[in-house]
Image (cartoon, rainbow, N blue to C red; front, side, top):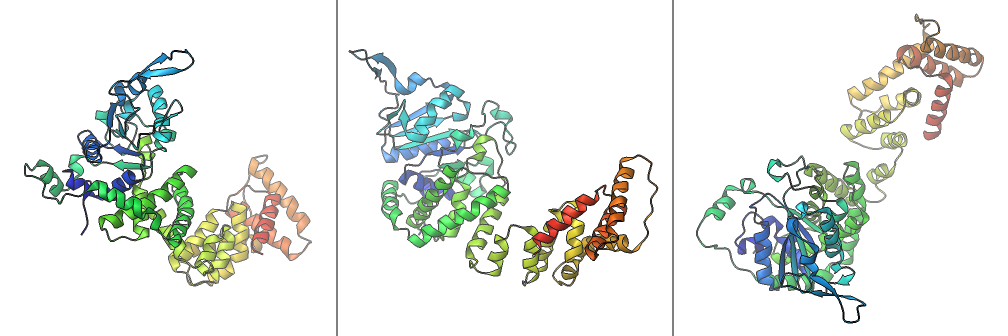
Length: 459
């Protein structure tokens, strides 16, 4: 039976965060709650602290002064160091801290909070009793993914600060919840969800964290090694610190899911953890979840391929031209094969495209797995080259224009090459095709360099 943490606290609509919340509590990880007003962010933390029985400090960061955190400094009797006169609200004896409205805090206050979040230190002094440091904020007003007319004072966090939060929970608003969850919130009936001992669950997670097999840890390292480049391709660039956080988060969430009775796999736990471990929404940067999902799927596929398989070999090849050569000798579906050929074509300059098509079109045209539109694109270039080789070209070119000057250099070069070998005949055909049929003002030296470059890459 699956245990429900948030529903047992009387909070509905957050059950998908049960395992990450339990993981954060068991590992003393920092967490950031982002959501509209009235979405139970503060209520969640307050109910958790009641159960954990930790000395709790709730700071409205938008109104916070540094003295509120540390107390009032006075010199000691020898006037060599400072001591702090503490108040019931100072942070020194806190076990659980919530920095509420962190996105409305003044920059100098955010800078003071930074080492507390990251190191649990104040002015270099370790906060030995602080176990849990969480924060909450409304969606930043400069995040296009939210309608933030109501949150004009909520500004995006600095990425360096946001990156110090291990978990980032995007809390749904009331209208984003299911009809069942809204009804449960509005109902005056007592909550009938089975009560759970969160303290006991935390202990079980801690006890089981070290049980993850070495093979699963190695799998996770390989997964992240594959994932990071795929995220970067989608414009999602993470720090080395975030990569390490992801590894630890996945381990703790996977363990928490097992403790809660969820039937889970390490692959699914990795995706669910990834969704609550990226800091960018706090910085006003919208992350498209379909891109995250795609990066995850590609990483899983990459890991599941044997290292010496054709697909793995093809994926590891970075040169798009060599990738085409490899693919021509493999059994690849038409969509993938056509994409590989199109990508190679798109990666080249016009002279390189003509030289590449000239040298590879016979082989590509015989491949049954290249679609008609891709073949047509290459065939057009090949036809231009054939006309450059066999037809007499003429064009009315204005005297002393840039195009006229280019043609003079091409024609002079052609005159020197005509008496030479067959390779030069190929260069002449390509140069004419580029100039007359491709409308490209490229000179013979450009064609020569492109021809040699392509030839060396196809060896």
